[in-house]
Length: 426
Image 1 (cartoon, helix red, strand yellow):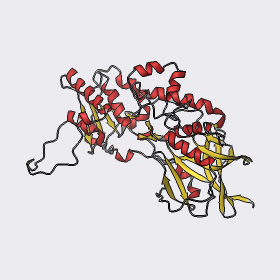
Image 2 (spheres, rainbow, N blue to C red):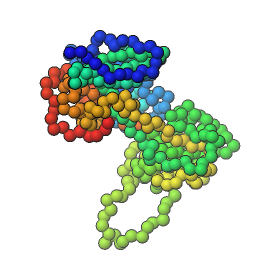
Image 3 (spheres, helix red, strand yellow):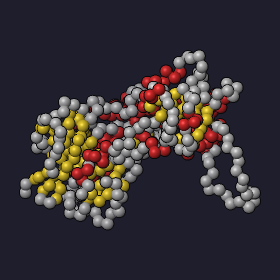
């Protein structure tokens, strides 16, 4: 029976006809999640035919944004392969051995790797799969290929750096999960005039402008940091390491930073019942000893700053309050400006009429569930992302979930799973 596809709107002058080859899997992007999938596929016998399409010109993972001392939250064992295959040649331990740093890492008494070193590990892994990756290739659309009334495969439209469009076919698609963001937690910058943004620094640009803040000036720079999550805490920790800076103000709605208010201006105590009658409170704020290692580090640096300046300069933490008045007198504002746009939503819009929702497989993986009889059982669409905390750490199950995707590709599916609880996503 003849195949047909929905019409494409490439928006460019040249189109390369679809290749005759049908890939088992086409992956949108080539980040840590896709790289973990490549490793799992190579270690499966026989491996499936997989193509990776990456819009960047080379592999990178937040290059240029890692602080010199910042580390992953999780230990090295949560790499791209170990939990799935402890004997994998792509484990972080084997990377250290290849770099002649295994003994030194073991003696450092720290289980969580430096981010700069972990990015090098990712690049080391990616180098082994360069023959399966098309860089400078942006996926612009994914449409179903119909055999009668049933989807038998997917067609992927790709635009290269010259604007030429190519078409590929695949039985399975692995696309990035819709991005989550903490921008909704950021207080507004109301009535703060900063010379058309010259003194507002994006967190993405912090490392490149770091020395600008630390330069010798007649008066110490006062800094305000707007944001939430681990990256905000890392920048605050780095700012506190500079003795030339003045007051540092953090404006956030991130409750994980609440313990730092112990160093800030204290609110007056509120009247309450005597403790012999009052019920125990279930929403007590975490204390410094109970906080994360990073928050404890910030607390100690802030305390040392207070002591060194004899109380003249300090750290102030404001949670969930209006920020304009607080930051009107600071010299620089460092602000989280991440983009909320979801890559997958636009790419998969042609699947909306077929999809029911998403079935979570783990922390990093979801499978799109389709209407009964609309899609061939061997055709799947997965949403996978290795990133947590705005991309600063990796999901702990990424190696296992990558193996799950590869295992499903190698199986012959005869019937669809019934009575599946799907979560609406698309």
